[in-house]
Image (cartoon, rainbow, N blue to C red; front, top):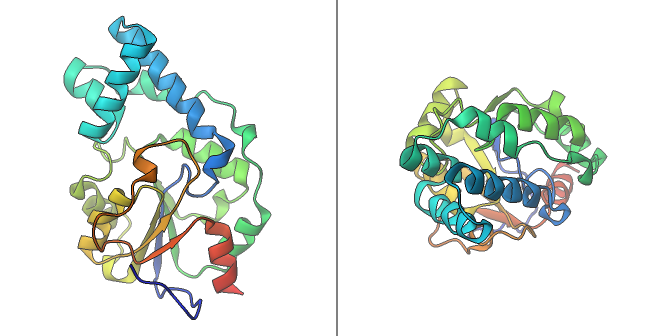
Length: 226
């Protein structure tokens, strides 16, 4: 794994940001709310007890990349009602981030949100953080035909839709394995270590696909932008 000893900003004309537990700290527990609502939806849809539903939820997440994809593939579950239900959460638990807003304002190049969540959820979170006006677009799970990260085909589609050269881009993400396809395409990668209670988020990178890492995205940007 590389480290920038001189604290210089990576050279890139496109910045691809994950949303949840990346633009805001996982310590606030926002994704815990989503996780609990996914468990509830799976339980109701399949007629399972909560503990059994959680096992199914996590098994599908590991196998398919998202619980949603597993439920669609295995049980023909419609996507839209699930996405609407699981994102009915209290986003007031995350604070506005003036320092991030200023840093994104100074950050050169195109800025894109790339998320396995819904566009509506992304827009709400960006508005809460006070940073939505800095982004050139959102590529959500529906834009990817409900095929989630880290499927490589979706990364290629992202680059095509937003017309950027992966060799001149950097991807920022809290789940290290989601950076593998980005690195294989030629992107630089920044892994944001999260405090979220998420087993896959805590997995150490297995390989050389992480160029930079931080446990504080805002601080990392501020330090390099000056």
